[in-house]
Length: 428
Image (tube, rainbow, N blue to C red; front, side, top):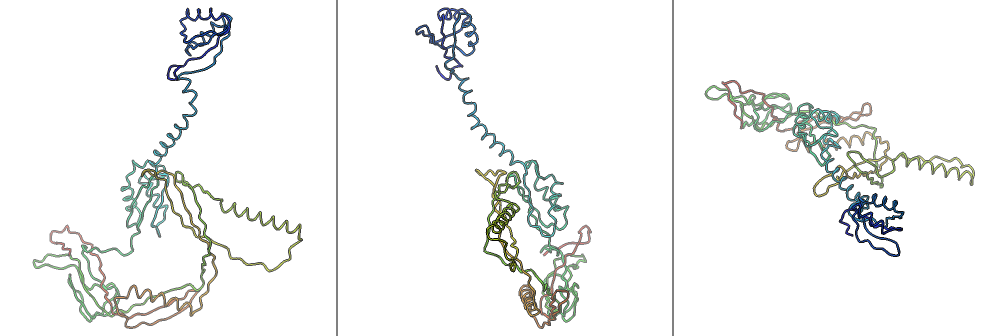
């Protein structure tokens, strides 16, 4: 029989087989390939006629036995459990593909002063949170909402990496940036006496030889044209002055000194839908196991060697750890799944108390001052400098008074509206 035919049964009938065959014909029970051997009948009947054939066998005193089941229905039934090997991986793959449409993890990068929870709360207000359906979330709208609602955010971008959302933040600088197209004045960055003044754009407010205070206007960006109209320009100038100013450099006398050890641990975790599942023993379990081993050693030592003699206790510095983590999501054919590996590298170190003497503190502060001068006064000329060192409440302070010939020009943006018809703006 073909396995692709409907279900059929191979039967064996013992007894009055002739009467059984005649009764099957009367009841229109189709039978195939019947043969009789020594009063035993063998043949095939359809699955749907089995109960009728069994009743006829009982009526005629025959014994009917099923020897084999064959056909499509029985083949499918036989392999129904094996189909799970194909069905369940397909279901799991479909679930993973669907799950990447939801946000399962969210991180905020680039913060130093702004609270991370404040950013996450602002994102939730804009419709982005754990479990959100990502195709329905406007990432640009979320970034704009964070920029508008949180003071101090200079730049924000929201990126989707599979089911992981990263919010990139750049905090705004304290000093507003003046663009080359913005109308502005030139003010003094430091107090000093002007020795040379060259105006490139704008109108000067002071003369060479005058002393100006810090923040005083030197060149104005508000000028008047030949026809009497007010113009706003981006002022620019070279202002060399003998500037006098003071800088302070501080150092804590008592500090913690960190010493790294040659011991590094690499820990792995599985990230599943935003949750990290560690593949290592937690520190608490390891510490408990270590204490149990030490206790066992003490007990066995006491039983076999007697009580230990008290000696000087070895002072051991506690070992601390510094961790850095990296995440690698699972990606197949460019499709990123909400599953990945997290690699955590732990570097061990010890901390010890470090107390600076006044000579060491002075040397460290002078080194810091030299680095600051190289960065900020490289374009100027230091005419004189006076140092004054003091220590108060555990803080060493190095105060240096500078006299430096330098460019003290600093732009200051002009907040202006061009609604008045009698004004015109020019940005150069």
